[in-house]
Image 1 (cartoon, rainbow, N blue to C red):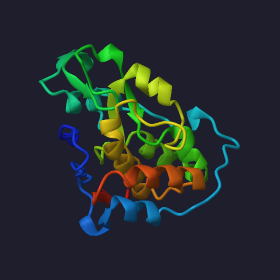
Image 2: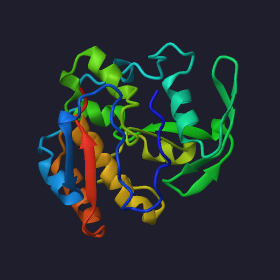
Image 3: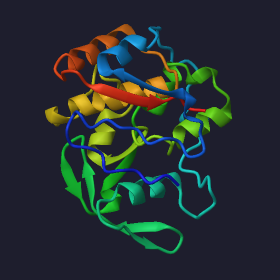
Image 4: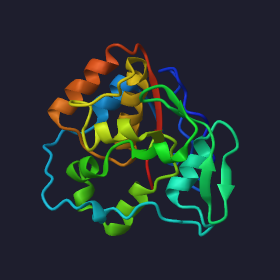
Length: 216
């Protein structure tokens, strides 16, 4: 599996790891503001949504480690303690949403940067089950999945930036960039309120480069 770099604490640190084995032809670099403009506007619809439409936390490479475990192992700032069956029992994680260091994996959730319900609203309702599974377990970009405190993840729930931003104001630029890059990677849409909120954040971030790679 791809090893994730430590998520940068500063807003300017916005690099994306390439998907292993993927051709680089789809790699793109834009500014945060340009990335927001590139997202197509569309009304959202949650009709027919079920969380079970996105099969997640699978063991795609059959190494006994689920997607959740892979993220915990990759994002730990020290070598994670792993027991048989790929049970992660200790490590050190930085939850950038609230800028807290966590050493108990049970206190962490793995957040889908763009929540599953939001992805459904924004175009995933038209995808195949296989593509929704790929989205829900995307280890090809360090932005797609992030280990954060359970309380911030559950506070966020399925909200977009129009109604929720991380409690740590210093993380807003990074969060907006991660959100936009994820939507660009998966060719998802935004609604007007969401775009307005993203532009409001971007206006405080300065010239922010944003790299992403379109998902295969």
